[in-house]
Image: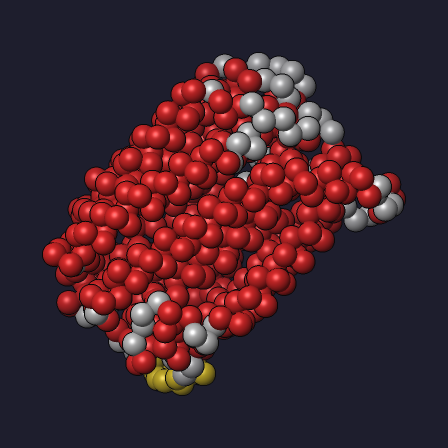
Length: 476
């Protein structure tokens, strides 16, 4: 932590970095996040495997609403980024007072937004599974899972904001560590809540393991409890402990701010977050449509689709880890007025992301049977999942290009054009192809469409980075 802080401080104080120092800084900021992302994915594997032991219905119930839960959680992330990108630019400009002020405004605005999301989610929870084309056999469990998830949105928002603020301040390790803790807690809670009381054998000793036997509801509650605990720890670290962000214990920061300053901060946040939020809504809508395309293929296809997405996340999580580092570095270098350095960090980050995810694609292709076998004991689901994972493996390098390029643009506050590009790619390429291919090829047709679209998206976002137009927005 000390070494990367020294390099970030060197940027803020007007110093230059060699190519080797830039690569080292990208790696130092990326590695904690990548490890946390991979650990999170492994824990989701375990989570999915626990539910998978309940049979195809349990996996299908969660899989049915998975795209919608992703939509709501991604809206909280977009709201957080609207404020944290401003903080990255403020820190790059060495304006720590302004950074803390933005953080204070962000807490009030984003938590209020999350409560509004919760109200919407609670209203639609009951009819949602039917809208998505789910059968009566899984509708009740799917609805209950989504309702419990939606109740965590305000605390999820607080954790998301705090995590994003810490990362944009250059502290990747604390959010990454707490992400791992959250996953471990999720597994423990799930172990106690999903299964009934039973007898297990450890080294030949028979032990009675207590359990609530709640099934799908237990999976939802386990995740909710884990998120609540870690979100509060993240907030404590950002608001009370971070040298750059601490907003409590400082008399100047405790004073009320002028209304004009507060409104300007919120307007700037909205200009950054609104395109991201609109993109997430439309992408979430696209995921819902994708789910509706998959749903008529049957319960086995729904379960295989959901579990394969979980398996694939092991490949693309490193890309998101590198993307988080790229957002921080882009924001701070542009805040410091160093456009050539920002461009250099962008290119190096994208290249690193593509290389790592190409290697992960090879791993996924080779180990697809083992990955799916871990997630489900149902042979039909396993075979279908393996076939679609091997299709997707070929798209991973360009998926990395899309992930990291978009993260670079976010760090610069350039969200409108990249969001439009992403939406056009998703709706015009993926869904059109999926609708055409699903009736003939089934689930492999849907995943072929996905692979084609991710490749196309990566190419057009690379063109955006090459143009240099992503650096034009003024943040601070």
